[in-house]
Length: 591
Image (cartoon, rainbow, N blue to C red; front, side):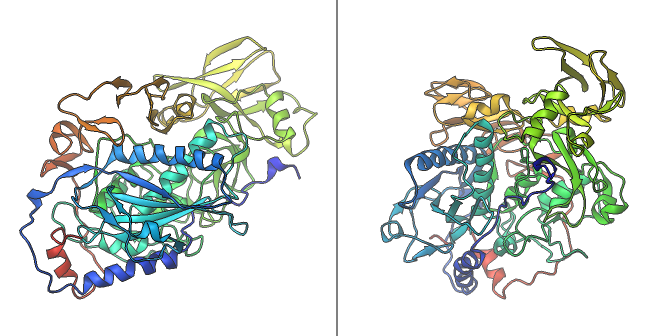
């Protein structure tokens, strides 16, 4: 069988390895907090708290097997990640430096004595280690191993890269973007997205722990019911009866409960494995970060996500095989992937709850010109005059006569190919190559078929142009290998500016501009070198901590924008007996 027909190869996972070690690290600290019935309180009040952009530091651990080329590459990936979070997350200010202390490991990774007692003036220190794990298929794993008594925020963590999966040959803009996505995913775990901390998430205004639920549905999905995440879930799926986000129920202990469920969130960045094609950083992840309690969002853009959007409660609660929706399909059906990003086949993977969906074959991503392809794939694209580019989509084709005889019998079953396109007023226009240097642009009305006299096949137009046009999150040239792309805008590494990191810049950055200094009302963040304006979901503001008008769907609460949402009343989580004491002393106990 040709390589083109291997449907879902084992997906490289975002695995929470060493989970027992991370849990042990945090349980010791949480148990100590739960005994704190008689701590002396001081006069610190909510009004005294200042918020500032987070400053992350990466402390590399020595490894003789890691060459300088790998160190330089990972340093660049992590630098861009640090800038991204500094541009989008705020923490409560602390005046004191942080020290790891008399611990010898973090998440099972040995920490040298010199780093145990070192004083750091950053807000979060992540130890960076490397292992060659030939027995596992994970890219990397990470988690927090020390939290502050000040507000329970993680202040030390670790990220461990699997050298087996780290691709250093033929590095290109697409592999860089995927590795940055891996880094962002893992850092979010280190920021607090780990099951043991769920019951310690709290409201950043009231400092009250949430009235959460430990409920699981009939398919054993943990339901994470933090208020902003629940509100987004109701709005996104258009289902009032959903009580929270459905967490992954498969993949073993290292994946289950620690990621969003693949069946409902598809290629969201915080699902449990990286799919072919780009992931999306959606409103679900930003809402969850807001729900931790120890972060505030700065002005942000999120990727537009359409999988499951407005599909109602049936999409979430009915068996997928009973649904007739684009998200699910019949097995053994060759097809364009969801949202026409590439060519694939309907099938399942290890996280899909026995639901079949349309995912991209390896080597048949319509947007990635750098991907490895088999000779059969190259022949298919050549015979169908396809164009693989950032501006391409998968289109269904139908032959006027017999199919191309030179292709294998298996390959001839694929009646899809990739063509350039443009969106004009939410309508798709296909750009077809007639010969080596001649292209024509033709409007592609929904569900209609375009015929070209020069070829022996027709091209069928997609049925939902508006959704496909809205789902284009890509950045030009993948940020020119210098940044992280979210919703057509890049966060650039130091020394570059522009929407796509196309310009050199030795100053501050704001939108596409390079500035010597920031405007007076902006916050000049010397760690990210970005001029920061307003907090998250704020329409106009006086400063990053003083919003004056919120975006639609939000209202002002203590100068920050909060969503209009209905609090979930049910609760079955039993906190430790002294948890109410912790609520009272939270924020007033210093390290």
